[in-house]
Length: 278
Length: 247
Image (cartoon, rainbow over all chains, first blue to last red; front, side):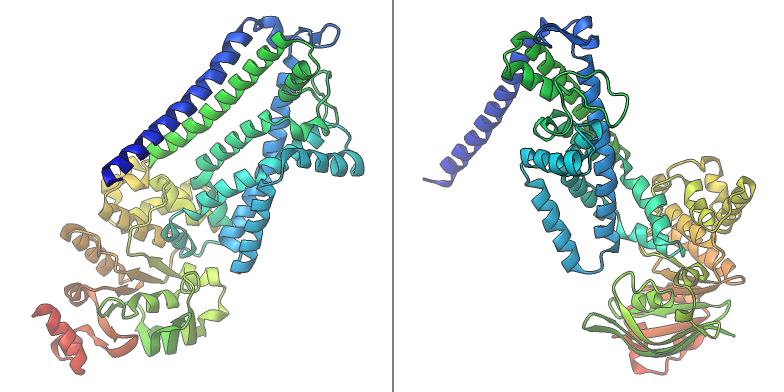
């Protein structure tokens, strides 16, 4: 085979792969859109689930709010830890050994199957720490899941800040912490927020970590962190798994996908504005 | 009077020895130029003086006295406040001009808006930028021209009232006009500040400095009044270097 044919085959393979991915994504979206659209109305989005079995009628509003709450708690929990860890590895860790141990731990964390995380959260938070099946337990479990994702992106952003700019801050006699809070973090703000937003979307779509730690079949909008919640992925799982209502399930899936789409587009827009500023 | 005294300074990065046994004194309120070929250790010598060396991962042995007191006995941040530094590449913070200049004063506790405005005004005037950018204080500093950026960085170094100003080839990326602006500014400054400038531009050293040190392979070859160095170098290597460039 000569170089030209090889090149041609390779190129065709790339194009075909791209088309396949595009078709699959469009198909999933289209399929859910067509099937789910009929059940979307005001009552579905802003009403409580009703009927017997519950969910066969009414709406999914508590699940939407529950999912958003879970996402926010997961993001707060994960980003505090992730940003601190990355600041440590980039600016404070003196030994390469400690740094690589931290990286190893984070990579291992990223590899934990989400159902195992769910069991971990159940044992530690729900049972041992007596937090119960609650918004807080679920949020923290999801937070552990998205922590590695935010940490890796935050660390990359922080380590890409121009060393000379950091140096000229030190050269003014300014302390490291002031440099970090007043110079480095403001510079990395957009990138880090975009990473947190995308991770939030990831957390919102996950059901395994919350099955045992937070989600229930029916609950009102939670009034405290210790209350159990409804969540979109879990509600979807119940609607289909228990054969309650396929129509409502498609509607729920459509709402979930739309929210995730909005979150991801927001994150992408943040990235674009950042690039234009440069 | 000598504001900085360097005694038997050795500097190394890991196994590599960059500065070998340099001893020299730097006179207060004078401009001292450090010349020498690329990679001879000029910049390393400069970064030793405000302890920026350790940020870059280097170590030194020997003694550096600032106002007759070992620099290691000062707080590290304090030494950097008193001995300001300007880098080769302009390094404005990607904030507004105003924020660039109030960054350090706010850290040192100046909160009053009027006082901050005053610092901005004085330092911009000092750097000869005031008339050029007075109306655009909220403009992003990175949008300034290269020469303006470098002058802003000098202004920023002045916001903390240093006594010594270290400049590491501040004009190497600038055109003739901007170089001239900065040279005139440094001449004006020498009344109030002690200036140490690393330069590969011999003509520049000759134009602005009172003293010149010639460094070769980490060793101080010759250190004298600029006029004497250029008119009557004592060491053959100095002579060759100076003539080599002109010839």
